[in-house]
Image (cartoon, rainbow, N blue to C red; front, side, top):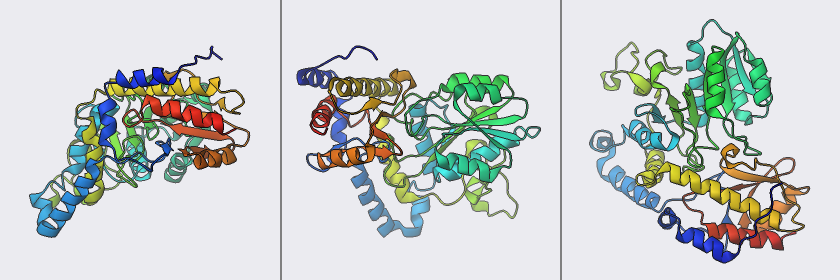
Length: 393
């Protein structure tokens, strides 16, 4: 353990005063009075613009009805939102679609990747991955092999592995894989990569293009703040886009959807992975959140997220007798969107914190997670969290 740094409230206020993202906090709706919300890893806060988006939709639905498909921007939302999301996740222009759910996109991208390695049979997954990821893999293909940790991955990557399919950030400890290094290793062994970035996108750097990733997916409702059940997204590296046929040959992925051809012809590029009619209301809410990033340098947001996590760890370790032990990596470059601590009575401790006005999340058997957003959390929120943690022993 490194030496504990004890800072005062004035230090945290000074950090907020120097924070270039401080004005963004005011673009989010205020939550329940007196409550500190640190569950960004479950659902992000609501942008104020989301309310205006719903009003706009209500007006368009009332007036335009069917004409909304042609007279408004409903149909091109998956591609338009993909263009807005791409810089946040470090993706190339034209490589991202906002559509469907994470599980559906996992299925689609897994089969797309497998189609590029027809001479190989195995999908390599991590034993401790988010369960849904492995459910999807084991339902989609017969040969799924589970391994543990980077060392297990390195040993198991052999000539039979077609796809290395990993959750970028561990959903319990926030351990973050080195995307570029593992992608490079997979490519050296002849395999492709598929990444689930649900606990990373919008909080930490993912750098898909720079890391040479092949395929990726993620949800929109955590750190991207797209709202409850918001659309997910998918990524296909440009070098693969015209080589793979979509797993679901839907009409929105057709080269000319309104031609109503009897035969399917895939659209060029990533658009071929669209399936059905886009969810207009969900896309409008998601766009309200993505528009917040228009004037934000993602690197600044990720640096702030790292600093928030570091300050939280310092505060917790300065509190004597809290019963909390760091479960996440101490090095911020290896942490995903939240900071996790172990506690011998974690479930009851989470309930006690909620009674004290702190919303965190519990994961079996002994994990407490504090989800941090660089967009709507202030450094002074971390200070106040530390005060309340000290009172809940």
